[in-house]
Amino acid sequence: MTPKALIAWSSGKDSAWALHEVRTAGDYDVVGALTTVTDTFARVSMHGVREELLHAQLEAAGLPGVFVRIPFPCPNEIYERQMKTALDAAKDAGVTHVVFGDLFLQDIRAYREARMAEIGMTPIFPLWERPTAALARDMIAAGVEAHLVCVDLKKLPVSFAGRRFDGTLLADLPASIDPCGENGEFHSFVSAGPMLNRTIEVIVGETVQREGFGYADLLPAG
Image: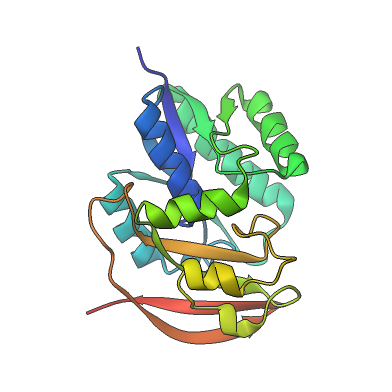
């Protein structure tokens, strides 16, 4: 029997690509997308993506959402309590694994492994230590379409917010910036790719700056 898994879903390219690879390999049955939503704004935490776009994305991915709802600001103990509640419920429903799209940050991986061990679940890291320049090109070549929805203004100019994740963007990134934004330089929203059964049409709205980050507000087209 294929083990049941959740995908840790941020709405961005790395989690989407991790879903694609796990589905292609066929070793796990991904039965839901675990997403943290900041209720105060009705947006995906960190990424700032509108909840209606998240729902459209998950529908296109064929995944029910498992939402961890948090306030803003959110103390870490509240986040961890809400996450544990969601994962305990998933475990009770037969889920044994959680897929993460992390690439190379060892402290993040160690944190996830510790939290999963406490709950009694097993983390999976299908993209771990994949060379990020090649990975970014592979995503684009496979038809992944994404926009940068959040940029760290200490690392990138605000003009990068709202840009498409494509070859031109990769060429324009400063040499110090990871091509997949793994150090938190940017976050994305995927609107098309092999993990989605349709394209989610979006338009880029206004960009706002808040607490050191630039957020491009993506809106459903039409």
